[in-house]
Image (tube, rainbow, N blue to C red):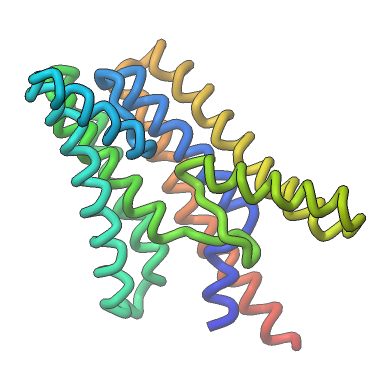
Length: 226
């Protein structure tokens, strides 16, 4: 099980997933009626605001992505429980996520509600399937937890002069930067390709799917030589 764990915790996989996370949020916000794909706290807040103002249609446009996000988490857990032999469950999860976003690219702007729900569904799969990088609990679809942990480790570095804290802090800050890069790419692609921009994110996830095979082989070879 050791090499299986390492397969889904490599830094380069984390970089790709963080970029895809930032891309999805930028895409849904810029191109799909200012709804967040990942930031469900923002969606819940706006759901409550519009609900209080009697704007029920707008409120639902924020509720369904939240509900779909939860369904994505549930699906990831279901895939995990099936113990599929052909693929590792995380590989299957990222493949499903890539296919879903591929489908979203064919939704016209008149169908933003189901498009946002599906995008959040994919984000739910990702946030549940990939929780660690090199043994550190890191989210690739949101930043607030990463920011807290990064700053905490940076404080301990300055306080205790232990370079391990610095390494962890830089890892967390690096993932946040990758998320920002994904958001920048999302904005650029949205300007040029509109609703089709999400295809770029789908490609990133297909690359992540392929990298997981490579990381699996490297980790397995490392275990064999010990």
